[in-house]
Figure 1 (cartoon, rainbow, N blue to C red):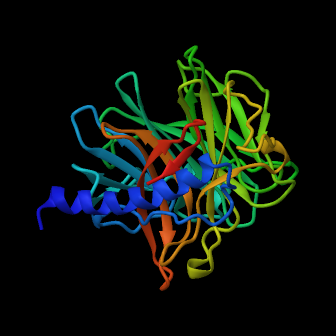
Figure 2: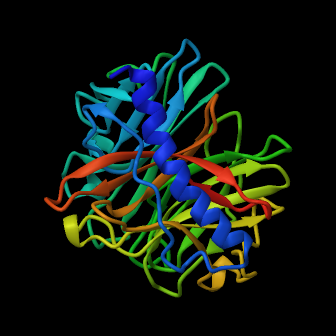
Figure 3: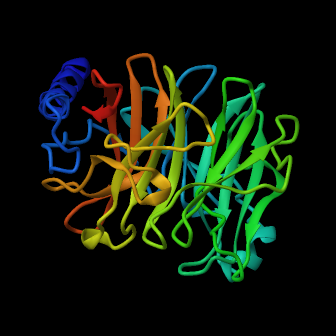
Length: 328
């Protein structure tokens, strides 16, 4: 089948489901009322991932980083076919082992391209612990082994009420840099960064979303129109076919919040509007990334199959008449 035609069929099927969602929401229905979510768009090749993050390359194509030993990389020319592209730190990352109990597996990276360089924020931790850290690495090419570690950005200790993993960089309308992060404990936090270093510019830690100790993690913030949209994942990742991950969203006119859901509930008080959850053979979609492409905003995430395999999911995002995003 012609590649363009197969893409059109896949996205078209998703669009029909999305229109159902949009009609329900426009009519005042609840976003938590188990709408008919779209299936992921077609992807091929090396598509086994956890916690994917995308960046469009200035020369064309895409670079993807995801959880893996020493941070795993993939590339794609067309956002459909993906291939493995090595590791960020093929010789290891010894500076992280204090937080990983000696392991090589590094989590939940965040990729962006700023001022002629790739920026990669990444997490070092171990399951169930908040003795964690977020580090920064940079590269001019993004290629495996080309990355320079720029050091520690933020850490958490067992005495802290937050967990320093799952970073996401956002630059606001005034050009200020912010890093959101967090998993479980007291929820999602935010710190200010210096654009010149990519490191913290002050000691303030802000709270932007919480479930009072319940499972919330993986923040992603994007500005669209008048609003900053905060996407998070609720519930449980990493349990294979028993995972209950789901993608939630809130919005604010200020990058630091308060973020509220469709019903006006503050995300710091457990609020959140669901936009993607388990449906059919797609189990526990989450740890989302949102980026702008030539055709639409793109929602990338991982999900599980019934066998427990973790795969890359990609859908497009649109916004309804009230400005709330939905996947298609």
